[in-house]
Length: 335
Length: 250
Image (cartoon, rainbow over all chains, first blue to last red; front, side, top):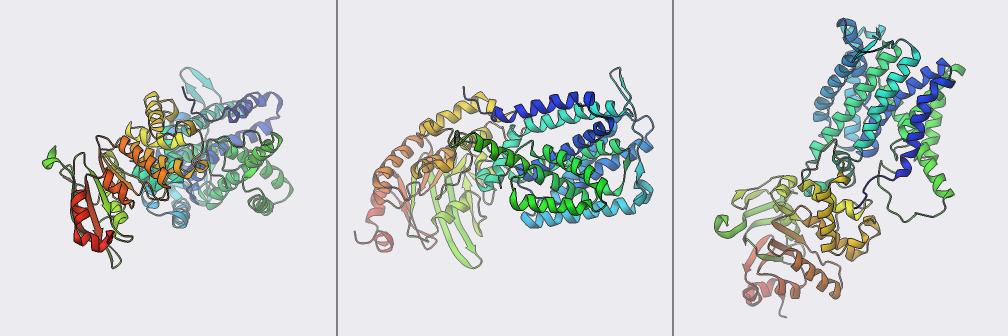
């Protein structure tokens, strides 16, 4: 039988990563465990963005509208619905982001290329304006504080206010989601999205409704971003307008580009590097975005494949020309 | 069959591109199981006719009936699922993907594996088997794992035919499948087309008159956006208007 799966070489780093992450609280100080939780949340956000940009080739400047929607729905729901469980809050956020994805996607996806990109920017600004002005619900510029409830699920009781416990909660649930996203890239839908990016006309003539496939993917990645936003609110125990701002879109763009859009795990690496850099740089100077911007410029100019692209090319150079002519399973967009 | 054995009926089809009239009232019929060649000089509107029939462009006027149903202006993906499939004059494939995945994408569409969020495309036995069958049918079995961009020209043309067949069509439209081929390659390609379209209905755009007269049951001559004649090969060969317009004195 033919084996038509991705190359196993890209699975092993994933397994090593999971093992390291599970053991991390044993040797890392709490501060770093907390930081790692932040990385996990942003990793989901970046993976969702890469499915849109790397796999489907859709450049969106509005991904924060879903992330922010998720963060706000969790904050508002936990504030107004006493006894709401963590899981229900997350699911509500996902539902809201899904709805937002369908509605905005139906409007945005009528346009392509730079028109699409600019419209996503405009829609993000709209969401931002709503969050700022709708003071009675969102708290406006003051933001909303979030009470992270404890987890009671099937007789399991977890005190999520504990940093390490919340870390494991995020690692396992978000990790499962990212694992599903990996699986998604091999499913019929995942391949359809990639093939539409490669040759939309042929896909139409092979019987695919490419508008439907784009809308499904846009909504799916919006829902994932909304889920990440919900974890973000739970993690910081606070939601402010920064969660839905253009800067939050720029953040995910930076993470994805730093990590590289050409591989599945690239954005995860990007989320790690970005979060650690942010942590170090903001200790040194308030002008950290300046340095981040410079890093971004250097990356785009000299390492367009991102860090994961760099790793791949180094590995290929070490391995010589062996396997050069083998068919590479096409994944995200190679610059 | 429905509609007196007609699978396709084109009635008074018009298409203009911002004032330039490329199709100016095209009417012709294709019978079930027929091999129908469309010939005509460059710029006669042959490819535009294909584009309008297969839904790439909406016609400016007229109607198209497939198996008695009006399909005018339907999008390509719907026509594909109604069992109409076409090839392109210039190979229109997924260049960076393997030959196998190219053909599989048509096969799995037929099997309803289009937008599934959970089922993997590479584990469906029926889809894989059918894809391999098709690849062997067109002689691409040995390069299944190669990216399309590494194929020779002749192999790319064979892939174009495999892609066209992958959705199991009843009506097959081939747009110059032998364009750019040597005589030997053309002969091989025509043998292949003859083999794989048996029992189906074929409409083919072709410039090689030897091929046209040996393969086709009927021929339509398109000239300046109109059908000059549509008849059996021997009638077309002797038609004075066709001679004047296209075939020349030879």
